Length: 313
Image 1 (cartoon, rainbow, N blue to C red):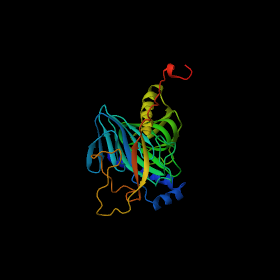
Image 2: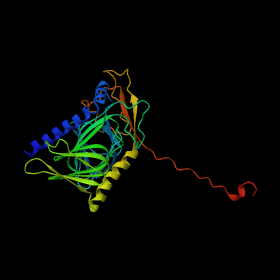
Image 3: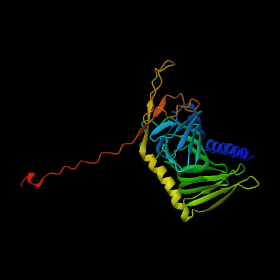
Image 4: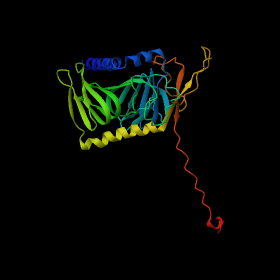
């Protein structure tokens, strides 16, 4: 019964998110369907401890500095482990220990002309739509400013969080979900009958609890001072991860056909990284996203000249 309720909440939450996009951004939605965008990517910027990444029917050990296709990916961390990821729209995500995250959907339009995405860019490079489920555990999310027409939905067994930008921590426990908003704008919904939801302000916490009636309750309060540090640390790691990588667009080779050899690994990936997901939206487009880890600039070389070599000495 609980599993059926969880599936119902996720289905309704996805429908609500779709409805929010269609009304105010109908034109943007029509344009999104005209051009196939590049297959969206996710980059593992930090991997500590034992974690697994599932893509399709294959399971891989998490390895730092790897990139792979995002749609349909499942991330699971064990005790004492954590990961930090960067989506190709510039969003950073911290995954705490004992956490399971399922990327149900993540699609992007082609990047804007002459608009490659530098590390920690203030705006995402194109319209994107994502739906991520946190089955249990805790995540920190740090976004760039989403462009008009984008949507970002994070769901849990009890709640759905529509993120319009900012910094947010989400904890999914067996009986409740805790959402701490540090910066930005989000709407929290609980259950299938909660159509309007409640808007959180920066510094506020929403606790969504399961009830015997099956309709979760939402309580809004200030973030407790003793809990602020943990939420801030999750979000800070997510924000720092954004600075470790850039995403750029290249055109696929038009001459490639059925007999073309397998494409080379994405820069920053490893041979055992998860393969491309053929069923992901955007597959078959004319562009592809390449991942380029950032390299710290070389420090300036200070040349010391002995005083006896200076003119006039």
